[in-house]
Length: 236
Image (cartoon, rainbow, N blue to C red; front, side, top):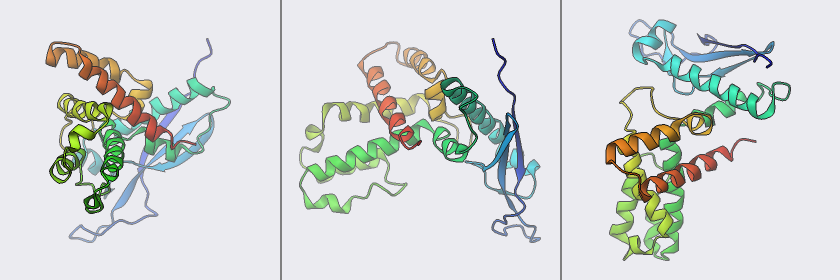
């Protein structure tokens, strides 16, 4: 069996870009970047979740596990695409856009998908009040939009497509299973759904938490499938 080519990943601060000066001594801050080397080709991409720092040591101090988290995603991304297309066909070109998509948290992907479906449902009520509801603001979560729909539109919940209603309630269960730590970098991402064992972890945790496997688990699977496929459609 042919041995896979080595993937080299190094983090650095891009000193060609200055961030906001927040240090009391006016010490410049720089964004976190990543150098990726594969088969004698290399590219530099910006960290998806990193901020501005004075030094690399500060990354570990303020954003613990961030670099390990992003390195794992990049390695899994490359390994997945190489297994799919082959080393000769794979290129680091476009890695920036792929990294942005594959590193998206599954919860964020679900929010995007369900908010879009709720927007369509609001419009289908034919009620002029749907104009006052914005689905684009980050504080307009699925939970709040669903609550607003029930308050504003008569029989809103009853009028929803059964699959959408199931997925909305399934999302609440999913968030209970994978709440994530505040400011932590241990949450499942789209690449974990595509090329990892996230579904297996989900099934095991669901059965352990609720002591059963039922239609809600199937609804969660459907939700993740629709949400991840929606965001993956942005990869050219």
